[in-house]
Length: 129
Image (cartoon, rainbow, N blue to C red; front, side):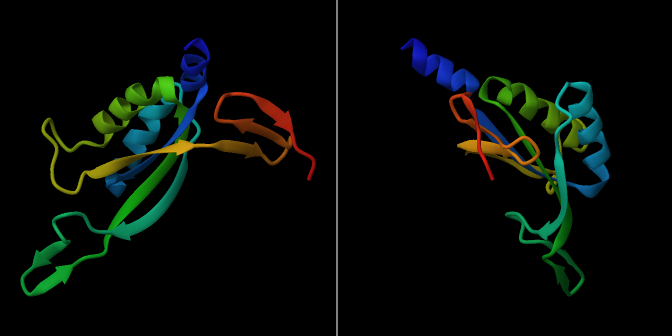
């Protein structure tokens, strides 16, 4: 129906991108240039399917990465994912450890300064603290 299409168009998603530390500046610049400047960055550690890196007898299973969080409209999702992947990929074909992008629905957001709540369907209302 028409209202279902409008809700999907206005719905928000969060992209949680785990990328190599040396690729963060590339990704942030690409997002800014593409018109998506709102990003939260965190330093994290972890491992993927490869279970870390083994060098000699030592296994390093807490590999430094950066996590970038960005919230975008559902209609922009594919474009933003392609932008992140292009900027975060090592070389033309990529390499193990380049990272992962997780897509999560956002039910609502609250802007602390204004007290405005935005729901998944795009409607807003003022919330008194």
